[in-house]
Image (cartoon, rainbow, N blue to C red; front, side):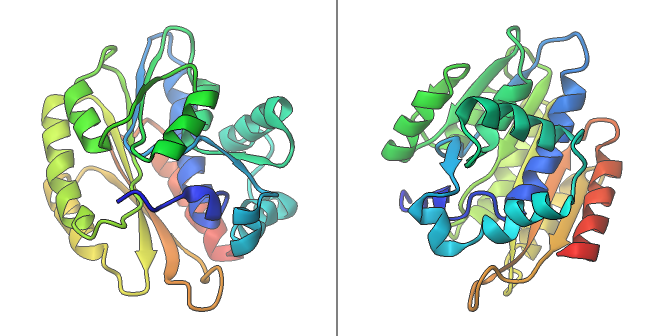
Length: 259
């Protein structure tokens, strides 16, 4: 489906959880003097205006990244906060970067990036800000299956669908198994929403059964507004970089204390 646009939800508490782990992983991976590949299956537009009508309509950024920054949830030297500071110096203080630009902050000249985005408008917006990457106007899983194993083989894949397609929950474990078989050294990161009906449970149970060594991190928070069904955020990460499990537990403690 092509109706989902992340501008309404950019900078919410789920983004904070996801992007804090993503930035920490990329910060570690890029410390080594070895090139890497970054892949993303559902990239979005890459850059969001938190003063825009979409963000103001839902208020999710105000109760998410804006609140977290005001209350100091993450220290200034946290990789996500360093990326936000650097990107805002270039793009403006009222913006929030999506995962492609957060990744772009860490990637070096010798690294390679592949970003898939099927929505025509989102793809065009992404093209204007992600000149560092090869863009794919195609289904993200098809891109990942075609590119993997990437060159360089070392790297990270982020799977971050909208979950508007109901079959995503059942299909994702199969897709990940195929990718992991081709790319056994890749860091494969999956984000998923935790909804009031807990529809993610069968998916995560299948992943835990297939890959018991993977990192699973979940945080809970109140609905962004009355009637909103998302009450938490989950990240499942295969082959997590050293130290990421400790970072996940720190984030979970922060959410328990403050969300």
